[in-house]
Length: 584
Image 1 (tube, rainbow, N blue to C red):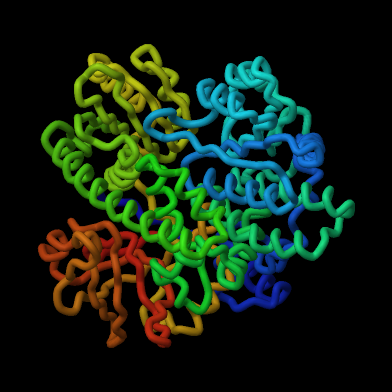
Image 2 (cartoon, one colour; image 1 turned 180 degrees about the horizontal axis):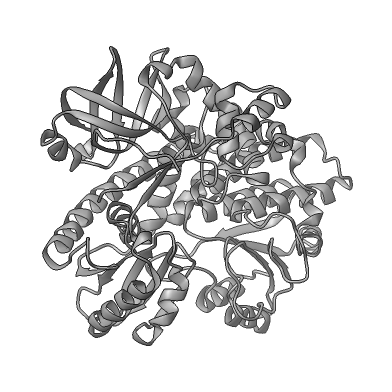
């Protein structure tokens, strides 16, 4: 679907002042200004020093939790780290487990099966852990809404410590301690730590207690530097804003992953080829490492993902990395199959231009993969998308996964349609649900009506906010290297998006990658040629073949490293037949 392009306005005087005060190139000053960063913040944003991490004792609920954990370690009580099955939950689980193991804790870990148990704490697992002599349960990346389960833990005599960052229920669980950036009664200045970020802060505080000093002993310092890499993976994978403490964690975590990876991560990086890069970027984690960890969770093998991160055995790490890499191949195959099936359903049963939302349902769809496909379809059509994997026999409720667009809060939307649902949960951008098959049609009607009344016609048009207009000739290696000063890139600090007009395709656009999912082409403008890639846009080949070959393009410039050579490439975000651009 066609997108509206809007180029950010620029304040030349502000850019000039920032160029001088922060001592940065003009292009960097312009990009900082576009991100709302003023002259006084620019240097701190770019430097992102490790010392900018706040004292862990300031995190709400953390001092009490760290004291309870220290006591359990001292008393040799059995501790279980209870995690989640996504990459954030896996890294948080492994990080805290490795910390407690290092300091002599009697510790194990538990990760629920996505298909059989679902997200978060569950009563059956707690009872099983209690039967296995667990004394203290530490949740990571889950638990803040587990009110009933916290009561069960207390009845079982389990000391429950909850560490989380997700949305809270109407009342807090009755846990022995709760660590959460937004815990009521506190005013922690940064609310966007992910599960692994919270776990890192807790591990830091535990090391301080064992060291009996704010300055931790050397072995613990080395551990925490390695743990930064785990926190970076979780932060990137959970798509939290890469600003403030998250920016610090990711910047230094990427350095740690390059210099001192765990044996599991080292093997995974070797399989994906990112170990050959001169330095790691957030995209290397977001597109290579995190999807493989998530694949293990999506296909019910999260326990093996945590084991990969937790083990120090080289042989076991190699075997696990290879198996998880195979799981990712299986996930890609499932994703392609479901995407084709869902796309066919959209074409046959819906009007993407007219319908306010898309609610798709079918048997045979894998519940662990539908969320990825919902995200791709939501991005393609700029509509909220709900995908429901129906039970093969029709005896059990179907499992749904939803993705939203700007302007629609999915959590509120599902709540408005809850009369048709067995269960639902999530947040504004992504959510999950359970629904009986006979309720699907009524839910579809109600949900689409709600979206119709909530989203304006303007909000149904996707918008690309472009940092600046340029020419291909201006995209020198030096200029793009200067843009890299803003890295690490991610949520709230995206890689610069630029545009240019009247470029021509040289030759044909060609498919590339497994399953021909991606597109490669050579573009020329005023004698300058650059290679351009479009990811997950196989339909563009046919569409481009029908154009006259002269395009306006929106793109992100990157530096491609291959066999020691570094070249500028373009990652296309959108294209259209050449026309006049508007600035606003």
